[in-house]
Image 1 (cartoon, rainbow, N blue to C red):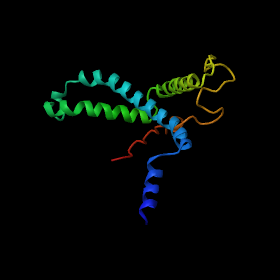
Image 2: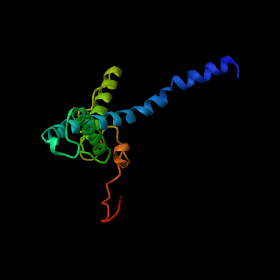
Image 3: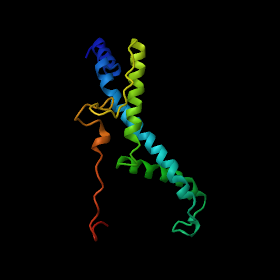
Image 4: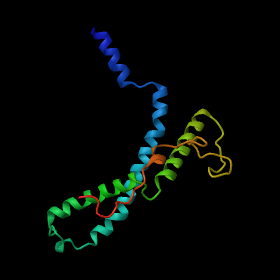
Length: 151
């Protein structure tokens, strides 16, 4: 493969088109909103785990357990968020989309839409009417495990 063709292929792979960048923005906002919910949930769970006396537990406490406990709390919060969480991600995502839309309107000199997002007959900003908003709509539900199943 000639050197100019390699350079062109690398450039097209590195520099996404405007259309692909615009399409990726809602997905990035949904991911950021979900990560925000994970951080908020971590902050809510942290005092619960700090109040547990782990010295009488199966691992006996100690500095090793104290070092790993914040990571366990964060991973538990991520898992909870991925399976529905507290429901913070959707309103955070909608607020971020409204802020982005307002910033774009301000750059273009348009008058901002001041109608509330929950006004009847109006779909929330960034969510098509009657359609799925994002990966946040497709979160799987947690099915109960039948008694006696599992290892």
